View 1: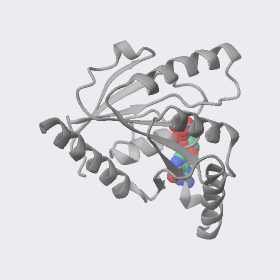
View 2: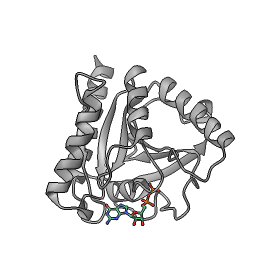
View 3: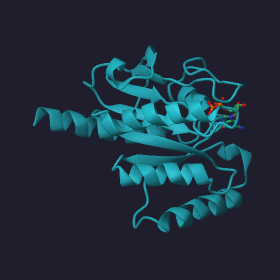
View 4: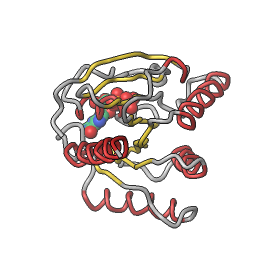
Length: 204
Ligand code: GDP
């Protein structure tokens, strides 16, 4: 997919204030510092679209971007940031949970995980929660330029193993680097395929 335009639309914490659900939407989520802003900027070829934050937990809103005037990319707050208060974390989960469960045009949620780390408890918990709630998701391994391919294979295997303890099937998996733009085409093509299915279903 060629990216022709990427435009910020709105930030909020309420599903009612999100844009009308009239086109396919894709959410990006992950722990702070996982490389979410960098990945979004790399995908849409715009270094400044999503703010690359130095401070964990800074972006605590549902951020809508309109891509190619035909689909929405949503940047969700990072979860599990240590410095946030319990109260903040509670509020975070409530509005994100509501968004993920109720947003009718949400086609897929990309769950970002840092490819350098062993499976993290809150990532696995979040994926399991998505599974239980029938929220379609894919795993995106980030920062793969930072480790050797054998270490990457080992870490990906460990994630698969962990998820297979709970589920019979695994979600789609992507490997990416915002430094080299590795994985960009595959991820955008995946979105494009789902967009086509959405269009076909609409015209049936
Ligand atoms: P966010 O908090 O999840 O939005 O993470 P950021 O996109 O702000 O990235 C956190 C840090 O990781 C920044 O210093 C980025 O430059 C760095 N980073 C993000 N993606 C990559 C990547 O693919 N490769 C490398 N080497 N560094 C990355």
